[in-house]
Length: 360
Ligand code: DP6
Image: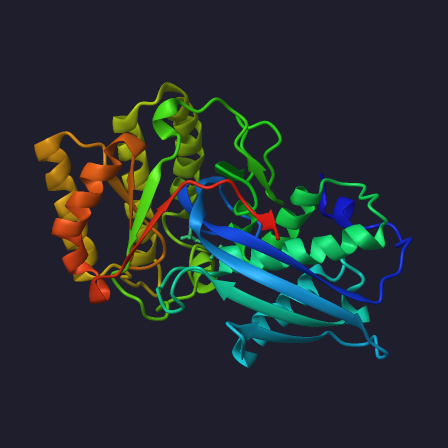
């Protein structure tokens, strides 16, 4: 598949107005995407993520045909409140995807969105938000082509979501999604996410993710700025090679159910992501003292109980605590008694692996 395969044939149907609503989840990467080519969210290395279940965005996209077809026209609402500060990001997204969705300037759009997780939780809403919006737009295109889409609906939605926010292309399906070309993953692509096509051991079924909200503030450094700091980064090439190797290794781990190897790979990926941030120029530290407290507590708990709990991080201070379903009760007890004290206002979100976006 190449980019041009996503440019549609002239539309055969006309529609004046309507609306579609999709909910789309967030995801948490096990092998991280950190560093992209100069344009269009083409990743430097393949990544793989667990799709989440509870953390999601629901977006209703209403559209009505307009007279003037020269500009994009839209309003954005978050929880029924007009959000003009979201507009530049969406305008950029519309510009990037117009080539693939040539109807965009024909309509005025009302985008009404809400998240299942608290607004200022420091949890990225771009993956769930951009994937939900991409799906709503695809639902319109499906009508315009009279149900005769020449390509896979989810694949194009993932392709479009990527142009909004790279990791968003991994949010449409579950339970594991790979984005970025890798020789061992048939069908993998830099352009969109694909459902992980191989056998997964029972140990990973219904895996749990409790998200500890250590810092609920705005992100100190946007992912886009962070990705760009990998250009000319002294360790970039080694990092991209490592991610490729980790993707190869995780395939065997997911098949064999080797939880110790899983822990080693996932925690190393999280710390490497932060090591890249600490060694870029300018450099930054996104972990907080409480992030380290939590990590040390997890290691001590593992040491003393033999638990298979582990952590991963995204580009911030919050900690994703990952554990197998058969430990759900004991780990949650540990989280409540020993880790919640390090969360801002004691807040955390109990989540688990999910199965992707839904048309409502
Ligand atoms: C650390 O997808 O948020 O979460 O493409 O600039 O929107 P943009 O970046 P984004 O980057 C995600 C980075 C990460 C790792 C990951 O999810 O793979």
